[in-house]
Length: 153
Image (cartoon, rainbow, N blue to C red; front, side):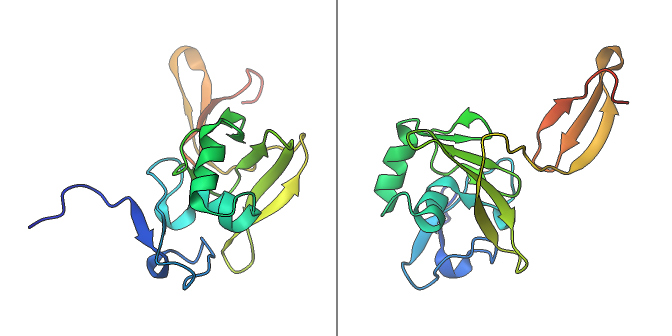
Protein backbone atom coordinates (compact mmCIF):
# COMPACT_ATOMS: atom_id res chain seq x y z
CA UNK A 1 0.00 0.00 0.00
CA UNK A 2 1.12 3.50 -0.65
CA UNK A 3 1.13 6.51 1.59
CA UNK A 4 -2.09 8.48 1.03
CA UNK A 5 -1.19 12.11 1.56
CA UNK A 6 1.56 14.05 3.18
CA UNK A 7 2.81 13.53 6.69
CA UNK A 8 1.65 16.06 9.26
CA UNK A 9 4.55 15.60 11.62
CA UNK A 10 8.26 14.94 11.52
CA UNK A 11 10.33 12.77 13.78
CA UNK A 12 12.52 14.81 16.07
CA UNK A 13 15.60 12.79 15.10
CA UNK A 14 15.01 13.66 11.43
CA UNK A 15 14.46 17.37 12.10
CA UNK A 16 17.03 19.78 10.71
CA UNK A 17 19.79 21.23 12.87
CA UNK A 18 18.14 24.61 12.31
CA UNK A 19 15.27 23.67 14.63
CA UNK A 20 17.72 23.10 17.52
CA UNK A 21 15.30 21.03 19.63
CA UNK A 22 15.78 18.33 22.27
CA UNK A 23 15.77 15.25 20.07
CA UNK A 24 15.10 12.57 22.68
CA UNK A 25 12.43 14.45 24.62
CA UNK A 26 9.54 13.14 22.52
CA UNK A 27 9.21 11.16 19.31
CA UNK A 28 7.52 13.72 17.03
CA UNK A 29 7.35 17.46 16.44
CA UNK A 30 4.95 19.57 14.40
CA UNK A 31 6.06 19.81 10.78
CA UNK A 32 5.93 23.34 9.33
CA UNK A 33 3.52 23.72 6.44
CA UNK A 34 4.90 24.64 3.02
CA UNK A 35 5.24 28.35 2.54
CA UNK A 36 7.57 31.24 3.04
CA UNK A 37 10.51 29.29 4.43
CA UNK A 38 11.86 25.89 3.44
CA UNK A 39 11.53 22.86 5.71
CA UNK A 40 15.26 22.89 6.43
CA UNK A 41 15.28 26.58 7.42
CA UNK A 42 12.06 26.87 9.42
CA UNK A 43 10.33 25.77 12.59
CA UNK A 44 6.59 25.68 13.19
CA UNK A 45 5.07 28.51 15.22
CA UNK A 46 3.67 26.10 17.84
CA UNK A 47 7.10 24.51 18.35
CA UNK A 48 8.69 27.94 18.65
CA UNK A 49 6.21 29.06 21.33
CA UNK A 50 6.63 25.83 23.28
CA UNK A 51 10.33 24.99 22.94
CA UNK A 52 12.09 28.32 22.38
CA UNK A 53 9.96 30.97 24.10
CA UNK A 54 8.43 28.85 26.88
CA UNK A 55 5.06 30.57 26.51
CA UNK A 56 3.24 27.23 26.44
CA UNK A 57 4.00 24.09 28.40
CA UNK A 58 2.69 21.65 25.79
CA UNK A 59 1.53 21.56 22.18
CA UNK A 60 -2.19 21.80 22.92
CA UNK A 61 -1.65 24.93 24.98
CA UNK A 62 0.49 26.47 22.23
CA UNK A 63 -2.15 25.71 19.59
CA UNK A 64 -4.92 27.21 21.73
CA UNK A 65 -2.92 30.42 22.23
CA UNK A 66 -2.41 30.67 18.46
CA UNK A 67 -6.05 29.92 17.58
CA UNK A 68 -7.24 32.70 19.92
CA UNK A 69 -5.42 35.19 17.69
CA UNK A 70 -2.90 36.16 20.38
CA UNK A 71 0.18 35.89 18.16
CA UNK A 72 1.25 38.05 15.22
CA UNK A 73 3.98 37.08 12.76
CA UNK A 74 5.27 40.01 10.69
CA UNK A 75 2.30 42.18 11.71
CA UNK A 76 -0.29 39.58 10.61
CA UNK A 77 -2.36 37.54 13.06
CA UNK A 78 -1.39 33.87 12.84
CA UNK A 79 -4.14 31.26 13.26
CA UNK A 80 -2.15 28.20 12.15
CA UNK A 81 0.25 26.43 14.50
CA UNK A 82 2.10 24.92 11.54
CA UNK A 83 3.02 28.34 10.12
CA UNK A 84 6.73 28.25 9.17
CA UNK A 85 8.82 30.76 11.09
CA UNK A 86 12.38 31.50 10.06
CA UNK A 87 15.11 34.07 9.63
CA UNK A 88 13.97 37.67 9.72
CA UNK A 89 10.50 37.14 11.18
CA UNK A 90 9.15 39.31 14.00
CA UNK A 91 6.85 37.58 16.52
CA UNK A 92 4.47 39.73 18.59
CA UNK A 93 2.67 38.22 21.58
CA UNK A 94 -0.41 40.43 21.93
CA UNK A 95 -1.54 39.85 25.58
CA UNK A 96 1.90 40.60 27.04
CA UNK A 97 2.94 43.02 24.24
CA UNK A 98 6.30 41.27 23.79
CA UNK A 99 8.26 41.31 20.54
CA UNK A 100 10.78 38.67 19.46
CA UNK A 101 13.10 38.64 16.45
CA UNK A 102 14.02 35.30 14.86
CA UNK A 103 17.60 34.99 13.66
CA UNK A 104 20.30 32.39 13.14
CA UNK A 105 23.17 31.84 15.57
CA UNK A 106 26.77 30.90 14.72
CA UNK A 107 25.97 27.17 14.73
CA UNK A 108 23.24 27.66 12.11
CA UNK A 109 20.36 27.09 14.52
CA UNK A 110 17.35 29.29 15.14
CA UNK A 111 17.69 31.83 17.93
CA UNK A 112 15.05 34.15 19.32
CA UNK A 113 15.93 37.50 20.90
CA UNK A 114 13.71 40.07 22.55
CA UNK A 115 12.99 43.00 20.28
CA UNK A 116 11.23 46.33 20.51
CA UNK A 117 8.17 47.61 18.70
CA UNK A 118 10.35 49.62 16.32
CA UNK A 119 12.35 46.56 15.18
CA UNK A 120 12.25 46.10 11.42
CA UNK A 121 12.37 42.82 9.52
CA UNK A 122 15.69 41.70 8.15
CA UNK A 123 15.36 40.41 4.60
CA UNK A 124 17.53 39.49 1.67
CA UNK A 125 16.57 40.82 -1.77
CA UNK A 126 16.66 37.93 -4.22
CA UNK A 127 15.29 39.55 -7.37
CA UNK A 128 14.42 43.01 -8.63
CA UNK A 129 12.06 43.51 -11.57
CA UNK A 130 9.79 46.03 -13.27
CA UNK A 131 6.03 45.44 -13.11
CA UNK A 132 3.20 47.12 -15.00
CA UNK A 133 3.42 50.87 -15.49
CA UNK A 134 7.15 50.84 -14.70
CA UNK A 135 6.76 50.06 -10.99
CA UNK A 136 9.86 48.58 -9.40
CA UNK A 137 9.22 45.40 -7.40
CA UNK A 138 11.58 43.34 -5.25
CA UNK A 139 11.28 39.71 -4.18
CA UNK A 140 12.63 38.75 -0.75
CA UNK A 141 14.20 35.50 0.44
CA UNK A 142 10.94 34.31 2.01
CA UNK A 143 8.81 34.80 -1.11
CA UNK A 144 7.40 38.19 -0.16
CA UNK A 145 7.07 40.67 -3.02
CA UNK A 146 7.23 44.37 -2.19
CA UNK A 147 6.75 47.50 -4.26
CA UNK A 148 9.63 49.96 -4.00
CA UNK A 149 8.93 53.62 -3.34
CA UNK A 150 8.87 55.69 -6.54
CA UNK A 151 12.26 57.35 -5.94
CA UNK A 152 14.22 54.24 -4.92
CA UNK A 153 15.47 53.07 -8.31
